[in-house]
Amino acid sequence: MNEREKRFLMAAAEIRKLTIQAMAAAGYGHIGGCMSVCDLLAVLYEEILNVDPRDPHKRDRDYVVMSKGHCGPALYAALAYRGYFDRELLLTLNANGTSLPSHCDRLKTPGIDFSTGSLGQGVSLGIGAALGNRMQGLDSYTYIITGDGELQEGQVWEGVQFMAHHGVANAVLIVDNNGRQLDGYTAEICRQYDLAAKFAAFGLTVFRADGHKPMDIYRALTAAKRCRKPSAVILDTEKGRGCCFAEIPGFNHYMVITPAMAQEAIREIDRRLERALCGA
Amino acid sequence: MRSMILDQFAMDTVEMRRAYCDALIEAARENPRVVAIDCDVSYSMGTGPFYEAYPGRGINCGIMEAHAIGLAAGLSATGMVPFVHTFGTFATRRAYDQLFLSCAYQDLNVKIIGGDAGVTAQANGGTHMPFEDMGILRNIPGFTIIEPCDTVMYRTAVKYMARTYGNFYMRSSRRKTVRIYRDDAEFTIGKANLLREGEDVALLACGIMVYQALLAAEELEKRGISAAVADVHTIKPLDREAVCALAEKCGAVVACENHSMINGLGSAVAEVLAGEIPVPLEQVGVNDRFGEVGTQDYLMAKFALTAQDIVSKAIKCIGRKKR
Image (cartoon, rainbow over all chains, first blue to last red; front, side):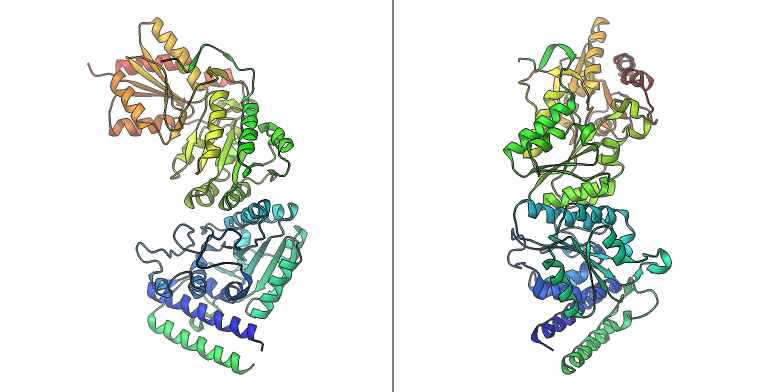
């Protein structure tokens, strides 16, 4: 295992722990979808992104759009991990008057580029940001994170078609393909069929990776950047992955989380991290 | 005070859409970040010359209004100043959630131009005839809503929108309208223009109804009634000060709009009067109906939007004053 992979693994464990701590402080949270994007967020904030926590509005920065806006808490954890704000702030998640609401709000939280929560809209916002940066000659990438359930929204496909036609190559559409949505399994509620083939048919260059293997994610994102074409990265993930009490086949979109549950989950994350690092 | 309006009114020689496109090209000359976004009705909205003047700064999304509004919001987050044009129906009804979340909720900077306001949709009929566009936008905090009555005001409003940060919705006819203002008339967005002094009743109008209100005032004068006329071109934020001053002076108000009576200019005026100066108010507007095909004259008669309808409502309103 090389140093980069170690850093990714440690970052992912930290982001998971911070997310769970924040949700435990609130008493509940969208744990399933937050857990499935933690490895992605670790790779993005540990290495891929050109961002500066001391200057969140840096003109040539890369943009991140958490289009599945209910996974704000995982992104807040990543931002705190990267140093945008104090980790203590995470414990105010959803508290009255907080700057960390359940869904991303660009006016409240340093490092949040767009407010999201009504699914599908982040895709157009991200493509707009990428196009705006391109029109201004900035060397900036925009990473748009969607859920697979979210792809049921028609606006996503308007955006994808636009992105391909207008050659918006400085945007990467990332799908957290965890196979589940609020009410159950995506395949049972409204099946997506062959997602990669759909993106390809819409004109995107498609990459695919195991969304819980940071080096796989890293290679896919790097390839998407290098291909200089409008691209999608499908990350095959598991909803709730990495948080032991959420790794269940039943409802885990949103869970009540007690301090004891959080403690046990955090201990398990540490154990798994140690095993992973030792096994190297 | 020199009048800001012409001595005689006549149909303009320039279409509203031509005035719009000229103004947009001018705004783009001043600010290199101004971009035009269309949804496959560039031809109808008359924005073609912009694409010729500024290749690469016009983006035709095709028929995807939700994406177009979101795209514009995203562009504006990077400092661009996007103007999105389509018919008022699709700009608002079709993309309401995007106007709410992608634009207003996150305080971005998008300018929406809704063509074919109300009965000016004419032959496109009920599906394309927005009587509800201002109403659904009034509910969103922070949106400025404008309805200009002629090309002079249209040009001024475009310039103002390009220079002023925030989300705007401007609705109007695309075609020729009666010219009201002198070339050098000056406007302040958010401030109503008092076009005619009067003491018995105040006619508050926007868009094509401004001309009807001026005609109605002339007719009322023949009957010995002195009617004030104000062009309330900014529906939100409403010029509360002007509305209250006219209500106080005249003691009766008629709101005139080419829009549903529900949640448009009349409702906005009612909200102010109810809280400040509860004088009688009558509304000239569409009474909770869908549009249909027809010429503008036919539709104005059908939906009771003519000068004669304003005269009747004015007389009724004056009759309701407390003795």
